Image 1 (cartoon, rainbow, N blue to C red):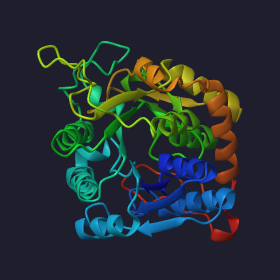
Image 2: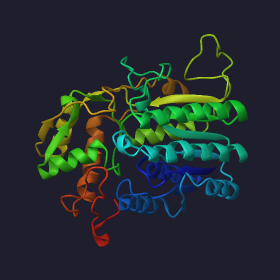
Image 3: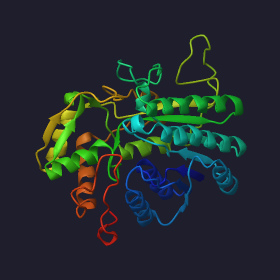
Image 4: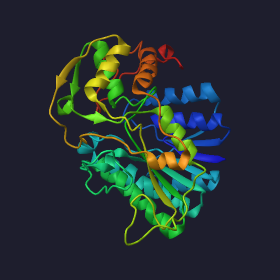
Length: 360
């Protein structure tokens, strides 16, 4: 199939692109290579994909460029769109809200409009477990209400789900929203805990655990994310004949629209997560316990029964095995980078000299 993958140089996007190329699909990738974090990591992901599966068509384009998106759809005529590009990050949204409006709202509208004018068989897009917000009942089920987001990032993801529903209803576009739960693995983003924690442990720096380390997260290994996504591609939603307007299911609809949780259904305390990183890095962490950060969800746990029912698959890679694979990549990739190679968001990480980077 002709598949357009947005965010193809991103963490999930690169892994997804590699899998689709290996499965024989014709992939066109889109990415703007912005500097939210070091663009060199994005470029290295692309080289990794190319080393594993050969060259592919990759366009440098911003989601907010409506005419550019329109021209791309007119040229490529994708049969399926996998929309993974977005402005990510909860804490970044506190200081940079307009980036989320431009990318996650304006950019998503451009994708919907392009799918409207150039009909596709299926639009799959990344949502987030962050949409559950203040919901205290776990595991989170797709039937739960998501009316109290705790960050603009979460609000933008819920808005995506609502925007997709309106276009599914009005124009018959089959859309599927994917609520990812704490994705981790090789080639991950440097603003996420695996790289930040591994960097702190490796260098003997204080490791900051917010909410005094009492958070629980449903960590989901990247290969499980990609497997779930690929299995959903041929399952374009149709109108649910059993949908009841008087007792409606928030995860289904009279429109060709669906929502799925993609998570491992095995929440882990952050203290246990750190212990596994210590084990695989063979280093001891210096832990600094801090209060809850604004915008953070207390705990996450996915009810992925709808995903299992639809695809016959449930994320299955254990955190121990997933972190073992992540640490092997981390040690190799960052072996030659300076001590400050991974910094907090808002600062540009220092890239290793080009000749020192290796495709793994």
